[in-house]
Image (cartoon, rainbow, N blue to C red; front, side):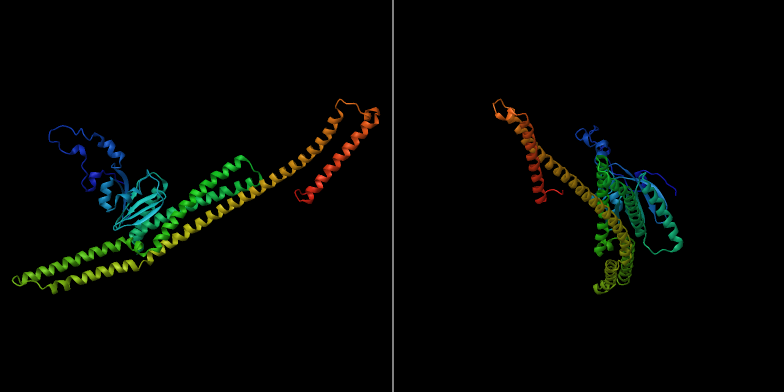
Length: 407
């Protein structure tokens, strides 16, 4: 494919005059609006952007358009072009307009018309692949006599690249996340928890992107009017046929007025000529609104692909939730064991405290006949130890009876 670079003025559309080009009556500069110079215009989005133009034959060239030129060329409002701005992050969108289809799917941001595709120029591999693949498909479709309209071929490739990109990312995430979760279930550590947290954030972001594309396709499939708006080739052919019919009826009316200049033309005659064209036009628009099976089948195929990807991501999310539940149960078990150990230790501390009270009582400075015989000291120790042992054993039996511990 041969690429040619041209400026805005070479596109055949007159350039928008800047404020500096407006004639000044006194020959002086415009000092009262200096803030709206070239730098301010660029900041507000008036600067030109590079676009790749792909025609019906598959040939591509690189052109530069500013915002207003692109609006006039594609007959799109500014809010639709804002969706294609790479400086902003918007969810995936497919919009059917009167003479164009605005497509913003992942890295593919383009404007599809009945006879050309304007693809936002970028060094991304998806954009380069879209340009080359669309050119090859358009050239191959000439030999195969493919009946699929030009705009649907461009839309199909954008959906294919977006769904394939999301599918590959989901597969890579699936390959990475299962070993990490298995390791976390075995060994709970801060590093593993942080790794799972980052993977879960990535999973949620990817799920949102897939969900948005799926919802966008489903929204188009549910509305026959939106799908009918995307038949750009049929609408263009219908407009051309309607204009040719009008020209033909005008020529007939001119011939009739030429034959009888003195007598006015009968309104019944002119109405009978123009009304069939209007009827054909209304019938054509009705057929466009009712027969959308071709586009519906195309969208349904990629709806199934994105729904499959979404199901895979949902399974990953459920596996992460199950792993988190297992970890919480495991931590609760450890926590319960610590509580049991703390309860046993508290009971032992209570018993030892009683023994220490006996020691403190006999350690006071008072006269007692107990100390007259040396063997009495041994009996005091033995009786105190037996009492503390019986008390601790009673404590354990009570805990077991209340089923507070698994002894």
